[in-house]
Image 1 (spheres, rainbow, N blue to C red):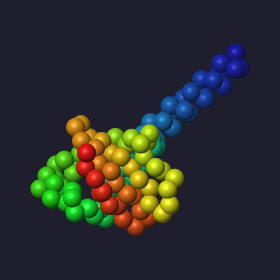
Image 2 (cartoon, helix red, strand yellow):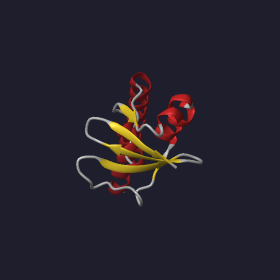
Image 3 (cartoon, rainbow, N blue to C red):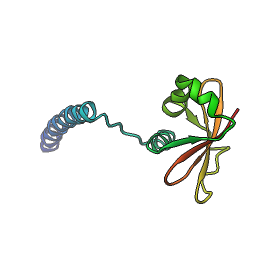
Length: 118
């Protein structure tokens, strides 16, 4: 009987804590616009969005005219880690795919350069 009583109090405290945590995390994310990225794809795209982006001469006209496609790469894109070179120094090379196209980019510590469009 003592175990069931302790388990009951534990579950009551746990449920209050979960409700409390969910309430404050939701409020914080709405006010500050923060997002919680735990998966590698999300973390890479968030890192890319946080840096200034430059373009190679071949792909600059495309991204200057089509900003919706540009956004889809860096917000909803999928990083192909199989093709990407994540261990190169100083700039890592990533292949990011949206619904129909793929870009190759160099993620340097201080900037991101879009190299090719496939």
